[in-house]
Image (cartoon, rainbow, N blue to C red; front, side, top):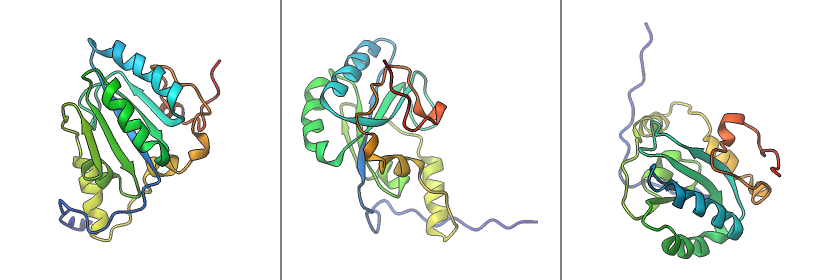
Length: 175
């Protein structure tokens, strides 16, 4: 019989913030606003060098509506914030840090533009509780990809592209 180690309590305010290596943005849409998301997808790639792209046409355990996400360089943070504030046309946008702690990134180091959506953070919170209890936890995949800033701007992404399905890092250059 295996005993499971109790989870540590995860504080609402983290004791420390790890180094921010890049930023992730999630742009949420539905069937009626997908055309806005598609336009934003094109415009942002004209203005910013992005990587770690994912387009989801359905909800998943973390994201309550369809969305697309991408990483941006730390030095583009301010310029991106100004741009997305004007360009989002009512869409909800999450901007969060990429650090070593995926739970803190999605729960504490966040900025929301528009309606704040409820994310499914339970598995991330449980993983953080295990980490705080001293249980070895897997390395955050998003951190690893976020550190690959050399990929920024190397691929032009289209709606439907999902680098996590292909695990093609970097994805093949599209014509």
